[in-house]
Length: 296
Image (tube, rainbow, N blue to C red; front, side, top):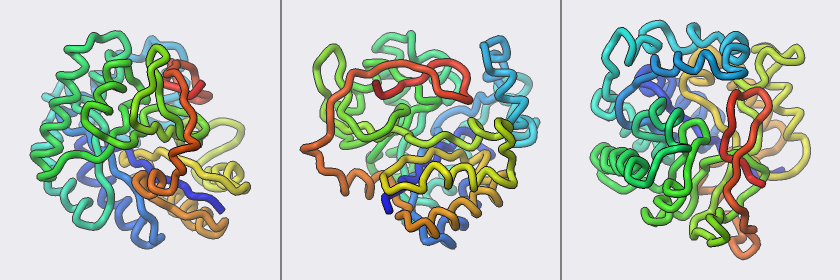
C-alpha cells in the first residue's frame, strides 16, 4: 500500500504542552513517523470567536465542540486574557519532539492573525509574519526549519515565494490530490507543495452519522486503495479528546499496509521529474467554512 504522511498542526499553548506529548507516545507505539508544525508566537485563539458571523462557522463548531476540545482558558487568550508566547513558554516541549526523532517545522507565528488576514495582506506584512516565525524556530531549535504548513491552509503569493526564498524543498500549505510545483502568474516556483489529500477529523465529525466511535472506520474507507496521502491532524483534537479514535486509526492504517511517514520521507520518495505544475487557487472544502488554498 502507499504512504500516508502525518502532518500535525499545533495551534495553541495547550496543544503544545499536552497534545504534542500525547501524540508522540501514540506515534511511538504505532512505529509511525510524523511532522509537527508549530505555532511559534502569541496564542490569540480567542480572536477566532470573531468568525461567528462567517457562513458555516457555527455549524462547524457545533459539530466539533470547540469549548470541550480547546478549553475555556485557551478561548479567552486575546479576549479576556493576554495571549501567551508559545515559543517562549513551550520551547522545551518543542525540542523534546525533535529529540524524539520527529521532523519539526513552521506552522505560523500568530495562528489566528495569519488565518484571518493573510489572503488580503501585502508583501511587507506577509514577510514580517513569516520572518518572525523563522527566527523564533531557529532560536528554539538552533537550526533552520525544513518545511512549512500554513495555518488554516491560508496563503498569498508572497508567502509561496518566501518558501522558495528560504530554500525549503517542500511544504504543505493547501488541499489537493497530489504533489505539485506551484505557479504564480505562470511562473513556477522551485519547491514542491504536498497538499493535504484526506479530510480532517473535524470536517467529518457529526456528518452522516460519523462520531468518535466510527470516525476511524470512515477514514479507513478512504484509504482502501493503494496510493499516497497527506493527513492533517491537530494537537488540540487528536492529541487530546479524540486520541482514542486516532489510535484506532493508526492501527487501522497499519493493518491496511500503509507506511506512516513524515513529510520529509514523502518528499524523498517522489520522482521530481514527474511532479506537475499548477497555479495557486482558492476553493471550498466540504465540512470547513470559507475558502482555502486548493489544487486546481
